[in-house]
Image (cartoon, helix red, strand yellow):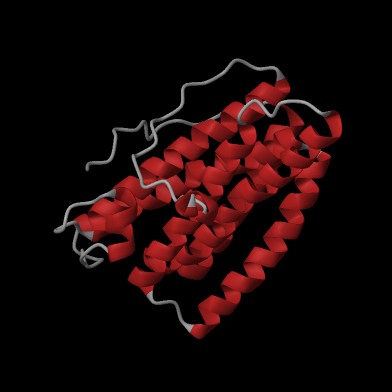
Length: 229
């Protein structure tokens, strides 16, 4: 399986205070990541994918509760956000096999997860539009980071090791797949999440829908009750 072609130039121009706050926050996160990890893209991915897996679950939970309170349909948002959270978690599990995080980096993962979870939960309660825009901008930066990672691999500065088994199973990659193949499908995933979340923010704001990048095919992880049925 090859990663679908994606538009690397997509950027939502901030419109209004909400968008500018979201954009400024994500740029601050980018500065911190660049300062702390420099070009250690595998280690950067471990920490950032931990953070990236939080918004989908928070959004799914709060939308689920809102729909229960209002007794209304979710318009497909809940499953979409849960799938996003699961997909980001699989990114994390993949890059753990690649980067072998140190004890300190594992501590950073735990700390970052709790801090970001509490922040994003509060933000979603205050302004779900801003929250989805934050994710959209976060994924824009992820696409850029993974593009740089591909360049590092192509130029020989990062070893193009064999793809981890968990990645081969999840994305149905061939036996001889490499890290480069993994980074390509992960980047395509992030482009899909980028467009979905900008689309959610636009919908909340009453703005036109935008085109969504295709999501790379991957194994759907079925819950235990389905496997036992």
